[in-house]
Length: 410
Image (cartoon, rainbow, N blue to C red; front, side, top):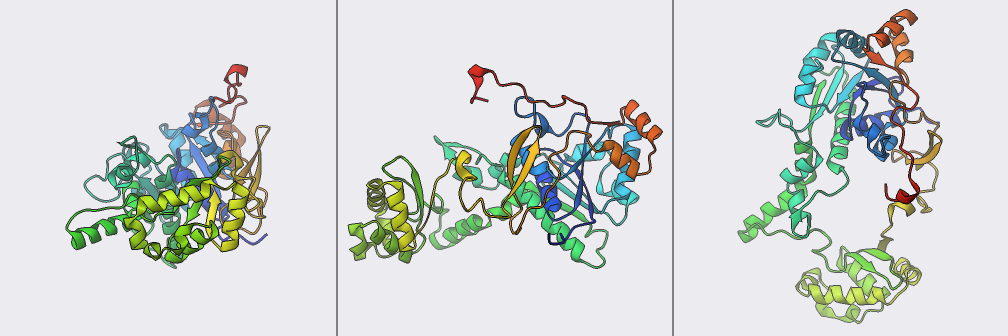
């Protein structure tokens, strides 16, 4: 196995839900030791599915160690400070008020470990809303994404927490950039990633586009999204009920598509250019729907592949990992967890997947880590008795049994 670049680095995560756990998931996949510090109540995602761990917890927390600390106790804070002194990086996504209350601000932790890289993923970075709360959908609402995504006319969140994940990835990029510097300053060791600022960056293309239209046209005209601005680009149903997503970005793509599907429009010079196809959007869309709808999936796929047209079947989640492309070495990590088997997608770019830890039970590694910090057996027992730390207990966060009548509905 290739030596991983962050091997030997210790990362402390105080994370909940998605943003910080996703960031430390990436750091773990790059070789870092990630210690997930959780309160005695555990990460919220430990109890989201029938009282037990959710897909989010399983996907983004395998390979980590769990240390359960009550940071609101003096003894717990002492344990945490010792841990911080041993670490290279701390990353968290707690609210600004909780960060101050628990005494885990950048100043607090720099006093313990001046060489620490500190990354706080929060609602907003510097500005008048610095202490305001924001979540993934709030970032979507405030940066234009939600206005473009409407269900029955009502602005709605996208579904997946992409802004959380982008923010986590941006945090990793900043951390790696800091590690590359031979002598980062104290300020450079303090990283703030705002969900709002993440949303701005993700929306940069659309924000630049609306400014362009304002200056060219004098009005804030916007397209309904990339696929709707290019007729023939999008999802179309074949005659056996499955769906194809067609990639038609250029005039050359259009010509290949129309020819592959035997469309008479392939020979129409009035449709050769995108600008003209946009003017006849309804005609083009109807023609593509009709041509695709005459074919079964296998025949349509064969024709499109032979013509060099980009496409994919629109797959439901339960079929995604069965695709031959997903089965190639280095793409899926086998995880056995609580008697169940999972295949977790690996960090992109791996050639192979090495065995790793399953998702940890709450406090599973508490005693092991305390001993590594210099606490002897008696001190460990005292901390547990004082409820300054917690250890794993059988039956915690168990999935409720599925009743026969409820099977498939949970």
